[in-house]
Length: 148
Image 1 (cartoon, helix red, strand yellow):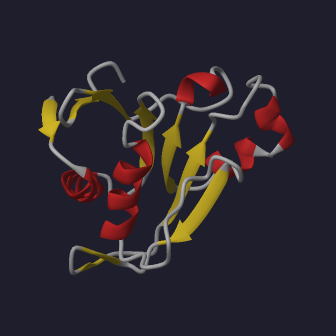
Image 2: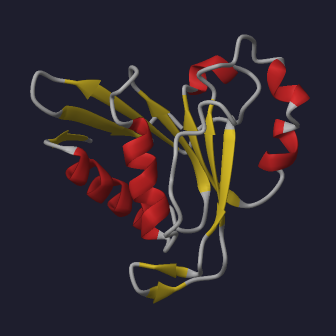
């Protein structure tokens, strides 16, 4: 599925739409060049779960975690842990072992993984791959779960 996104607000709304589809957890890959809008999309997903604290890119921390408030778009849900992971600074997938990444994937949670290709072999396969292409005006977002 492909969708044209005109601005940051539309990207966050798309993130909220995606959250409704993945409310039980899963692994989402976020692909795109620097500045494409991966973190903005992740922010939309995270905010849809009722998180009000600032959502920042985990470029330096690698992993930011959130606990969903048990609400998604006004509907009550069981608590859900959300991990926003940014692998941009990873030099080698082996580095994932040093941060104990396997332990994170042992729990049922929602994982939003930016730059997943840098974790090749060290992270599970995605349930949904999201690619963002920068256009002259706006973004083209491709959602693909057919290969998984």
